[in-house]
Amino acid sequence: MMTAEQARELWANSEEIVSAQAVQQSLDRMAREITDKMGDRFPLVLSVMGGAVVFTGMLLPKLEFPLEFDYIHLSRYNNKTVGGEMQWRVAPRESVKDRTVLVLDDILDEGETMAAIRQRIMDMGAREFYAAVLCEKTLAKAKPMHPDFCGFTVPDRYVFGCGMDAKGYWRNLGTIRALKG
Image (cartoon, rainbow, N blue to C red; front, top):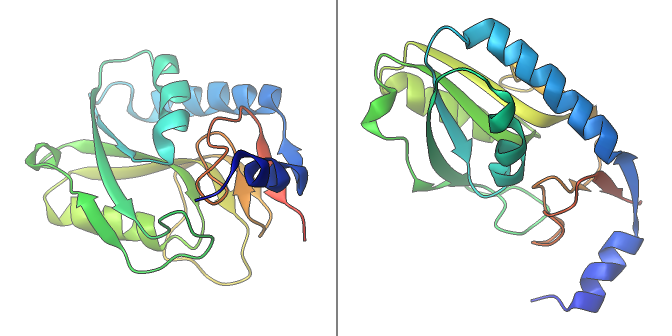
């Protein structure tokens, strides 16, 4: 467990790469794009806990159409900076069958987690699957998928804020920061 001082050192060893104003503008744009694509479909919106909780809380009020909301929890990071084995903590419920499903997550890094979520939801009989992420990390290697809706592309650095954490801390920031070096 980290001390408050160690958490402050993480913050001090980072730089802001997306301002709070830019985050809000991006959320407005994403809400318009999502509304245009599925505003007439009564989608099931699933938030990936815990990272997407802040992003979800910022985006949902901007979606001005009827939707059903639930959550799933699949983790690869467990407060570490490198992804490991996928662990389903809360799987999708049967309500995905014959539905348009929109999954919200904080970041699409290598794309493995979202690809596993998509596979599980489609195997359960969803009609359509869409992914919306606040950030997609720019990587040199190919990914199994890309999001349908994306707020920002971010460099291949460890980023945090707006629900993304740095070793379990700083999810509460309204900006997006990247660790230096």
